[in-house]
Image (spheres, rainbow, N blue to C red):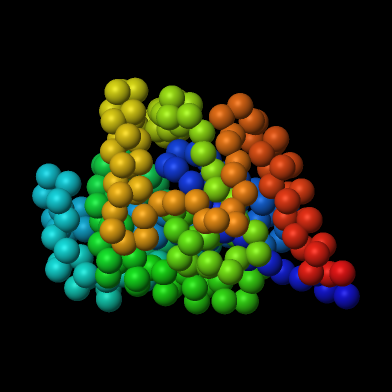
Amino acid sequence: MPQHKITIAIDGFSSCGKSTLAKSLARELGYAYIDSGAMYRVVTLVALRNGWIHNRVPDKNKIINGLKNIYISFKFVQETEKNTTFLNNKNVEEQIRSLNVSNNVSPVSAIKEVRREMVQIQREMGANGGIVMDGRDIGTVVFPRAELKIFMTASQEIRAKRRYDELLGKGQKVTMEEVIKNISERDYIDQNRKESPLRKAEDAIVLDNSNLTIEGQLEWALQKAKEVIHTYEN
């Protein structure tokens, strides 16, 4: 009897390690991984390249009109052994992770038409289950009927340190103060935007990974996933 393939939605605050957990969990289960946050980062990157953002204020009309020329895809690159984001078939994984994109992605992702377009694409990608998707509104908006919903959180100080180390590791020159400011601003915007604000779904399981290792959180999530899959096979 083939294993029942579920949809796993992972939501939570920025720099909680959502993508790290989602990628590992997808690999362990043999599922597809979709980074919804990367999709909003791609739109932000395009907006920045075209001058559609001024002083962190996006030109909504130009961004909305530009959506028709944006094709986002995800591929596993053998050379790097990483899931990679592509814009119009060009690798933009490194560019979308810059602090400049991070500083502008929240106001762009708050645009109603942008969210609706991305949600539609995400639903099409995950129509047949067997996926792990992480973001801000996966369990509440994109897949409200997902069989397993995880809401991740961690202290702001720990999240800032993780993000700071990540950016330094990529050779980007940033200060801890800049990172803390970025995380604080993103938390506020994500929770207070009108369109699909960040919130925990009522049936989501909370994972506070402030004091968990990457291996520890994966073990926890894998156990939860296996428990849910088991209920559908009996």
